[in-house]
Image (cartoon, rainbow, N blue to C red; front, top):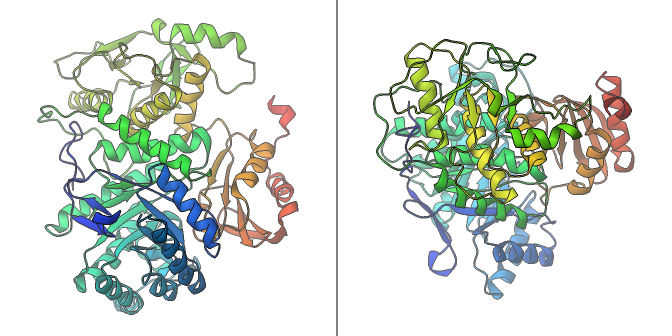
Length: 590
């Protein structure tokens, strides 16, 4: 299977065109030779027509080319008529997407008024109860027949009205049927989407895109790679566009890094025709991150003659860390093998940050680049390594950009049977002028995050960020976002939408204020139940909107406390963490 012609040279995937709205009047074409389409979602109540119109206009003003609106009920779906009419009266023809989850009847209403329908296969025609059941082939076929009966009417209506569709699988909401046959896995996500795609194709409907969203960038990358590889194997006619996004990425630097790792890695491989950056912030801020990603990606990829005859050092569809030899990075710090991935800094950064490091600080440099015994290699030339304990890296100013160069270095080492540990760099060109912080963040996250998601790297060095303290913090944040190292509380926080049952931004801030000192604890903050239990499967604790002003608390994916008044919920979350032995008083962390 292949998701890209080459991991060393950029080749944009050739996809079908999907038409959303009237391109002559503000509509867009996704796929083909068209630029990557940026989109976002409004966050207000769908029944509030004025607010929905204003938020849509605000998104269009900053460059959103598609705007999504939630439609949780038939009543909400019906009000899309008023929202769309007001927008068109104001001369705004941006395509509107109705976000549908549990109610097919809401989709059948919404399709009358909007240019595109997003459905989630995991909960469009299925209920999720985490039930364990062995399906016979006949039972499975019966379930698929039932799903077709629920889904086909929407397909036929989309075809009749000229609408587009997104078949949007979420890691957090796979059906029990899929979970029992394929597991909570990338394969399950892909099969869930393909089941619905086959129904659409059976009715000769092709105006749809896929998405494979997860809050874990590694899982998200594996899912999209597997999806594209499966589409390639299915052959001509299956070249449907894909929409990229890391769901529930969170806010601030963490949300941007997670999104840059997941979306950026795939864009660098030529995968992705439309994107959304999901942040727990005001929606217009998502578009600026989209813009930065799309601006930086061309500078991080290789378009020249391809590298030939080299086999990958990693499996693109199943994460495994590259096997490496354990060495002493310094006298006191081990690197490689089973050791955590280390953080290296330049001498100038070390001199600036060390005086400010406190004894209990987890964010601290572990080695100085200029002091290391590191062999710098041009992976396109023949090389030898003196011994297996030699730390290696890519030489600066090589022909290849960093992602391709480090992939090639790992492949060449593997070809020679060498397990030398590798030091990753975010940039190989020190002649570049200092980057602005937001640019440095995107570039470092894409480069280092892509390679870490490939399983490559035993230590990392951030040089593109000129600020000493910020470059150190950025390195640790990339490792945490990539799931390689935990030095602080990890948050899975969804962006707000009309389904949200509390103010996500203020609640997230309150939860962080009380819990951000808990190293190694993962907390999910979910505005509603749509993806809650599933996305919280690998979280320690969950804070989920259950009803207006009422919160349900979870341990893993199991609800344990219900209908807690919002005013008490944060403290009850702290109590729950304490009861499960995960609490540490802040004073002990200082």
